[in-house]
Each structure stands twice: as C-alpha cells, then as structure tokens.
Amino acid sequence: MTDEVPIISGDDLKTDGSDRPYDPQGWPPIRGDYRMDDPESRIAVVTLASNLAAVGAAIWGPCKTENLGVEKVVANLISNSNLRFLLVCGEESKGHLPGNSILALSRNGIDSEGRIVGSKGAIPFIENLSVEAIERFQRQVEVIDRIGLVDEGEIEKIVRKYRNLSEPFPEPPIVVVKRRTRKAADEALVSSGDAVFGEGIVLDASAWLVAER
Image (cartoon, rainbow, N blue to C red; front, side, top):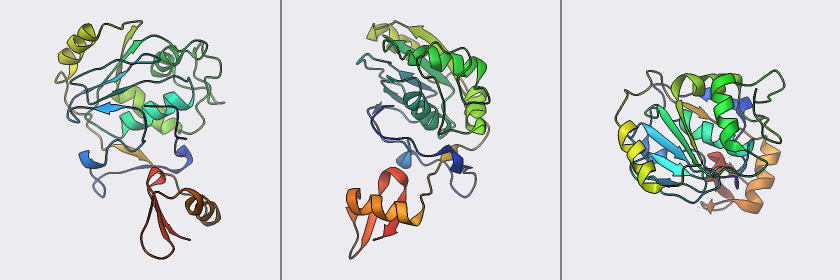
C-alpha cells in the first residue's frame, strides 16, 4: 500500500479461479510500503499519511494519494478473498485526501470518466482498474471509517474485533495482470530487470513477466 510503484493495468484484469487459487506465498501482488502479519485475517488497515502499526491485520501501510495509492489498495484487497474489512485510520494526506476517497469509492464507485463519485481529493480518478474491480471491492470489503485515529492500542482493538468476524468472500480472488507489448517489455526489462536467468533472460517481478532480451 504505497505510492512508489506504478500500478499494473486494469485493462488486462482477469479473474483467477481454479487455475490459480489463492496462494499466501504470492500475495499481495502489488509490491510497496506495507507490513504483513496474518494473511488469513479478515481485516486490512490503511494508515493514510501516518506511520502506525496494526498487529493482527493481514496487511497494513500508508496510502498518500487519492488515485494511484487508492488503486493499489484496491488491487491488493481484491486479490485475497479472505479480506472482508478495511480500517481507514491515521491522519489524512493534505489536499489528496485518500481516506475520504476510499470511503467515497466504497459508497459511490466511479463515474463514466473514472472519477470517484463524492471524493473531495484533488485528482480522484481511477485510471488503472476496471469497473469490475471496483464493484468487487464494493461487494467484498466493508470500510471502517476511523480517519484521524492514531492510537495504536485502539487500532489493535479494532483489528482483534474484526480479524475473525466474517467468512471469506465466496468468490475467487481477482488478480490484475499487466501484459506489456513485446517492445515495451524488452526496453523495460533490459534497463530494470530484477534478476537475470542465463543469457538474455530477465525477470520483472513487479509485472510478473519473464522475457528475452
């Protein structure tokens, strides 16, 4: 749950069912500035612009923008059907208001232009997730509004209350997969591949892509 790595494209959204069951070792798909505790927990925590712990949550971390940051939160949540609750706490990021945007997205979704309906953020546009992904987020996850809460003891109490409160969402996870063009993949991997497997083979883990140079 961070704003540092570009989110993968929603144009290539696919639902992974029996061919790719939920794998706790491969979750979450979007790398970033977050901590993980119990992947079977039913609750995730966004701490907005604050640096807070949420022991017992499946995943917790900051979200500082109302567009890419929110997209990454949604992408990681819908890729784990165990997650049924999202606690939004910590101090808002001034101007961006990602907390307000998450609440508005949950309640109202997006309009035909991708704008989060009712968000007060500066640029609250969802550009990299499909309507299917947004609707899945709305159906799967209940958002708990505690914006402004910075007491880690109180956060832990909320996590304990919700971590085993519900059954997993009764549909397979949705995983967003980016498929680059061959030329774009080659150029990106040559310059920034994560690992090399022999002559001319490079792995880009952020895109789940292995390609030849």
